Length: 392
Image 1 (cartoon, rainbow, N blue to C red):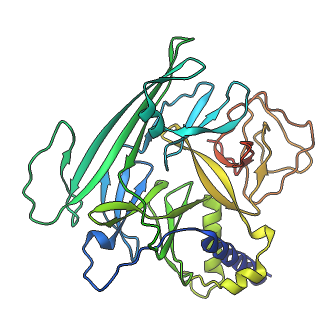
Image 2 (cartoon, rainbow, N blue to C red):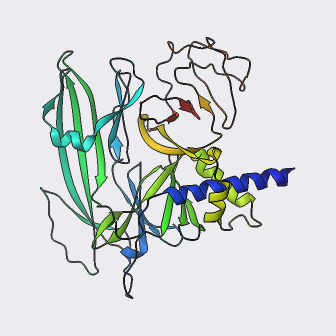
Image 3 (cartoon, rainbow, N blue to C red):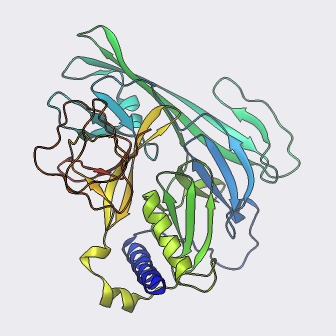
């Protein structure tokens, strides 16, 4: 029985990963001609939410060195209503608890766009001010030692013994001031590396799948479906870069829910004789076996770093538990199908893959407006339900 269950899970895992790779419009990187590869070109650069930039091996994902800077996002610890949640991947903004209590909704601008438009004033009396600070880090590619930093105020001369790595980073600072209450509404700092995308005419041979909940990265060969390596960098990954043409360039990556990425790798290991064996897939198998249940659904993951809330898009697989929008759930020993126990604090803990049904009218959403930590469905109408909600 256990073997049959493991076989089903392994087949579903292969199917999901196959669909993911087939549908992903990633770009491949090809090196024309035969030439030697420089040290920076043999590395991947992995940016994490805590501000670390890891230089890792393309072949194994092992860390060669780490450049530590300020976190990618810095926002107030305490949220007022409406609250703003930034996306560390691109600086997008989500608002919670707006004028009409719409729930969690994506705004039509990013932090960099707001900063570029500032100073400006919104129709509801909010004053926006912005500031940017550019810096170049001059780094030894062998050791990761920072030789100097180049800004508008400092530009020290250096005498390098070896070729140096130049990494550009921009800090965007935005503040919102409410003219009606004469109070500071919100402020945030967002850091982004200077890295243009790859040329669309080129192809990138690896697929980087990252977890929205922790630092797990699984790298797959897009042509063969082999899992090349997996590493956990301790903090959610917000960017993957390669060094080409004397500068960083964005490498395509996909963000998946922690449970989904672990499910795929777990299924791979269970279906093979060796725990670290490769995961094979077939185009024909996918075409014949693809079903609606094997689709990956786009969602919005809301997490917390050092008491700061953030939001990022991620994909989840079928079978993830859903908690309908607006529910107030009580802390219980385990899921119940007959009803739910509601307490004053309105908190809950949910175990993944549990199909829970709540009768109409058994819950309410008035006691808890901030049931946030977890994954939310992401739709064009900006309606959101909670998936895998974990309260701290």
